[in-house]
Length: 182
Image (cartoon, rainbow, N blue to C red; front, top):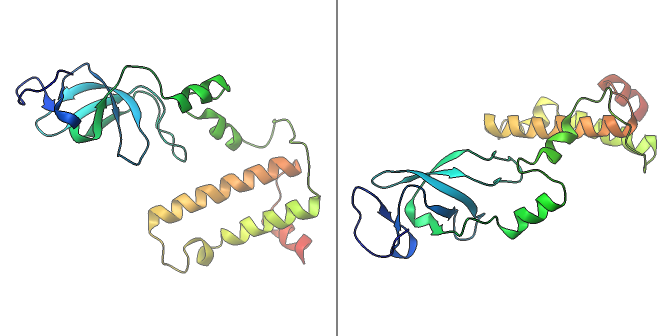
């Protein structure tokens, strides 16, 4: 980034009047949102394309290398180092792409059992609750949710079921969960 100047063929003004150019390291994100380190790969007239250099997001992790179209006003100059919270996650053995979260969603069979801290009845109650939440009227909130919201909610509930299956040590069919509860 170079200070001042007017936008030309080689850059656009970023936050604070700096000129954003191809190859610059920037932090992008909203003022009150997550800031991510990236590298400018293309400069357009009103937007810039930024390649992500560190992981972004917690619920839906965007992998390193994702290219984002960003307004220059959402970019600030960066020194090229990772944010402190990202460095802390890496030191704790959690990779850039949040594989530690995805690791909980692996198939149940062939995985080591999770040590039980709750009774089987409590786990079965939670399994039944997850199955009930997956019923169409509960999943869609009686038709009030959009398709995308329904898919997100169903995926989260299925992931919850997989964790519960790991905790109990086997897959529990819906019918068995209802029988045990009644």
